[in-house]
Amino acid sequence: MDDNAHPLTPINNLNTVTPTDRPNFFKRYWLQLTLLIIAGILSLSVIILVITQNRTSNNSTSSPTTTATNIPLPTSNQLVQQPFKILSTSPKDQEKNVFAGELVISLTTDVPIVASSSLSLEFTPPLKYYTKFISSFPTKTVMAQVLGGLDTNTRYSIAAKDKTGKKIYIWSFTTSSDVGQGHSALNSELDKQTFETYYPLEKYFPYSTNDYSLGYVDHFKVKITLKHPGLNEDTILNEVKAWVKSKGVDPSTHQFIFVKGY
Image (tube, rainbow, N blue to C red):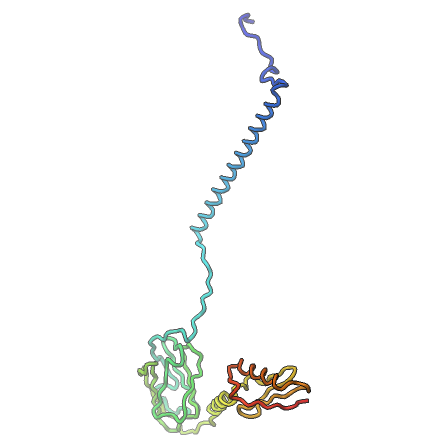
């Protein structure tokens, strides 16, 4: 061994912590450990934030957010009638031996007819009564029934007009010699008009409560049938008139009579 070499220092003498230094040593140790933990948490939070922002950005780029909005479909009153052409008719142009009863006239158009006011039919010679559209609008197939029927052995010409009165199409046909059936459609229409005019509450009858029931006895005359004694007629009459008014009918147009039903 070289006599000039330094002797080895025992390993257990390195960084020896004396009892006096122990408190400071542990303070420094826990402080460093705490700072490392905080730094780790902050780093992890930053990484998560970056990843989240990237995903959000990618999603917004690839599939843009859309907001569902319920848009109501336009009604026939909101639609605007476009110029139209007649493509076909029934009866056909120049057709013969056409039924002379309450015939249903039909025609097809290239664009929808949005309302009955968009189209009119002019007959030559004029009809005894009138026609009634039986189609639901808007439609490309317009149907109109001839109420009261047609004359036999007669050549009819029909002009289809737009709402301005401009003639769009004219065609003709000739009826047969056979007499049409009874005017059932006309009678039904007249009956309906009669009820709507003189019995406007008929569609709501019979109407009944715990105290009374209502029904027509004549045009514009309503019978109030009381179900048990002790009822105040003035109170019930006011209640009935309020109900009639709620149906869109003026109570002053009707007469009300009380009948005991018990």
